[in-house]
Length: 194
Ligand SMILES: CCCCCCCC(=O)SCCNC(=O)CCNC(=O)[C@H](O)C(C)(C)COP(=O)(O)OP(=O)(O)OC[C@H]1O[C@@H](n2cnc3c(N)ncnc32)[C@H](O)[C@@H]1OP(=O)(O)O
Image 1 (cartoon, helix red, strand yellow):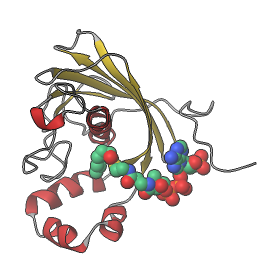
Image 2: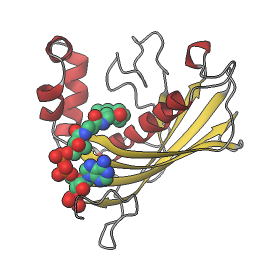
Image 3: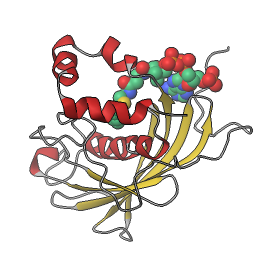
Image 4: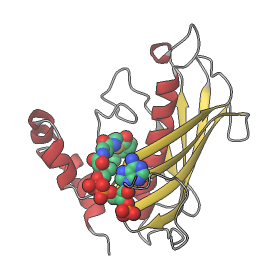
C-alpha cells in the first residue's frame, strides 16, 4: 500500500530551521494574526485569547488562561481546547520563519488534567524543515514556564500561499478581512520571504 507519508519524524535530509533575519525580537508580543481567530483573536468572546511572544532561536512562548467556557469535565479544560492552545502556539512559529503555514498533522499527549483557572504556559519550537514541511514540538506547563507538564504535541505544518485562505475561506469573512488595513499588514509581513 502506498500514499503520502504522515510521519512526524523529519526525513534524514531535512534541514535545521533558520530564524528569519526580520523575525520579531525575543520577548516581543506577536499579536493576533486575525482578530476573530478562536486561538488568539481579541474579537472572539469565547476564544482562548492566547498571547504569544517570540522566543530565542526558532521558538515561541504563549500563555493561555483556562476559562469557564473551556471546560470538558466539570472544572477541567476540554482536551480539544488544549489541542487548540498547542496548535495556535505552534502556528505562531510562522512569525519566526516568516512563512505562512497551516497544520497538516497534530499529535497530542495529555499528561495531567488542567483545572479551570489555570494559567497554561506554552512553548513551541521548529525542529526541522523539509521542502514545504515544517516540523515542530510544543509543551504546555501548569502555572509557569517551569511548572509541571500537562500537555505535549508534535506537529507537521505545511507552507501555503495567501491564496490558500482566499480560495478556501467563506466569502463574507474574506471580504471583510481584505478590507481591513490591519489584516492586510499582517498578510504583507509574510509575503516578503526570500
Ligand atoms: C495563518 C495561520 C493560522 C494559524 C492557526 C493555527 C494553525 C491551524 O489551525 S491551520 C488550520 C488547520 N489546518 C488546515 O485547515 C489545513 C487543511 N489541509 C490542507 O489545506 C492541505 O491538506 C495542506 C495544505 C495541509 C496540504 O495540501 P497540499 O498543499 O496539496 O500539499 P501536499 O502536496 O498534499 O503535501 C505537501 C507535503 O506535506 C505532507 N503532508 C500533507 N498533509 C500531511 C499530513 N496530514 N500529515 C503528514 N504529512 C502531510 C505531504 O506528504 C507532502 O510531503 P512531501 O513533500 O514529502 O511529498
